[in-house]
Length: 179
Image 1 (cartoon, rainbow, N blue to C red):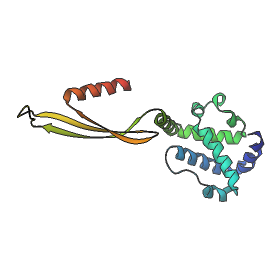
Image 2: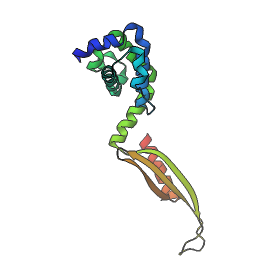
Image 3: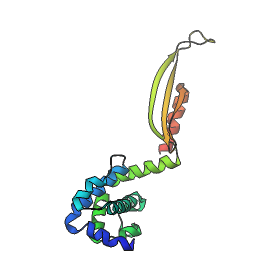
Image 4: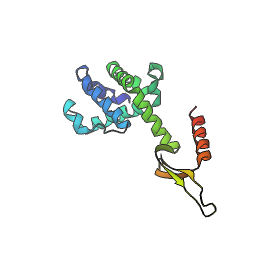
């Protein structure tokens, strides 16, 4: 990192801070699942080479993926942050203050996908069972619940059929985990 610091001084001089802010927000957008920065978008603004862009993008992306940055505290920031010039540090902190909630949500979702299955969506249908081979008139409501979960391997659907008692147990279990 020490050898590349002059690179950042040249790329983000005081008069080009607006480009840095645009790049920071584009990197946060990418982490949040939207389209991110591209070389062509920024190359004309500062006359970057592809190598300069890639190195700068990698540094900013690494910083923003570091959960320690979400504390917004100088002491807890990673070493790469402290190696940057003061005006770049301030731009990073400003971006983090503005986009902290979005970035926190995205990083939690990303971490959660890698470690656990995460509920993405659900679909339900209510059925009324009128009878069965054992009872001619049963008239029991039955909920068909499809839970769409995602992990690093992909998405899958968990199908459940719940009667009223099972549904109440399911709801109370979920409520207890939220608390």
